[in-house]
Image (cartoon, chains in turn purple, brown):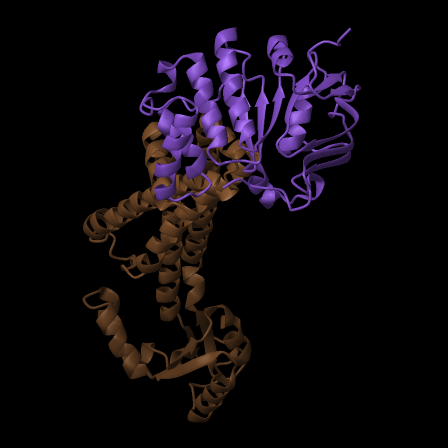
Length: 240
Length: 302
């Protein structure tokens, strides 16, 4: 069951003149950022360190609030989101990180099931859905392994499975291939592409030139907090 | 809400942090023993107060033949008319509960009983005794009223307030009571701080899990439940330990060792335990749960 935004509105993420300055910092992390991302898109977010990529992600997750402007996700203005509705908002978004962030004391199966257990899904549903997702990411048969017994690529697949098991509307990946070799990275990207084709919007922050150039998806480039490029089917550097 | 998941998490939490859980139980138990002791001391003082207050009375001694001329109000030995006046005045005085009359003969017989065998008893006669009214008040602190009412009346030789004799005892009892309650209150605060710190360490050691739970969209309730219940279980265990200790002290130490030797002190029975034990359990659980909730709010940033 995938969570769709209200009918008639294909925009899942919208930033309206969003600026963010952290307290005790002179320079704003984001300046006057406005953009729209529609359902089913695959978007790369690139930029050097300090360009505001992480802030962008955190604003979507509402780990931070904008200093000015509005962030609207799935038709909901995040400024107006009450604290007790926040968990519900987070369930619409699956996250994958560079350092995998698996629970080291749980098996592969338990790590993925965890995402369903803590939101109160019944055991009957979990037992059905988790094996399906593990098969989707290519880890069928490895349910009982512990994270430290897996390669980097396999651990990231577990993370992707956990992010996707709840069929979220948006999948955010923060440098998912950062700790992986090029070959394994390709495997992860194929996985994310497959997930994107099921209708999930994918927003991926990356430094990986090769992948951006190869996949030719929409590219958002940030430089010192400003959106300097928004190009459909873009490449990493400017095309000369 | 999945009960099974929550129970699993509590079990894991208790096992992994066993030393910390034991620390919480011990500190809760110590604090509750102090609190319980304070409450029992308080009950003991009230018990003793009731007992002694019931015993005190004001005595109005009247002139007999021997006092004549020696006291201003004793022009003659007490007459019936004077007795009547004094009696009526006493009965009308506010706070007076009962007025009992004791004549010379009765006083003599009582005296013989109390001082049986002593030289004083052998030498005294009926005429040495005085008629008296024994006045019971509803509040021992109002003894001066009696004195004020009858002191100047003809025939009244003296008014004696027995409560004055016991004043030092009552003062001691009050001081003990306040000390006990104050110490208990301080221990409660210290225990709260210790539990708070222990729960904080526990939450900090689980921040990876709780971080992922937040990211994945677990509700605050779900994230907090294992901590709150762990705290409740530890607090309850502390309360049980404290109750067992207090009951043990009462049963063995007080009843078998102290009471047989200290017969002048009336010790409390088992009835206060009926409300003290449940109170300790409730306070133990409440304190732990509150400490847990407070820690989570501050350190989990849910």
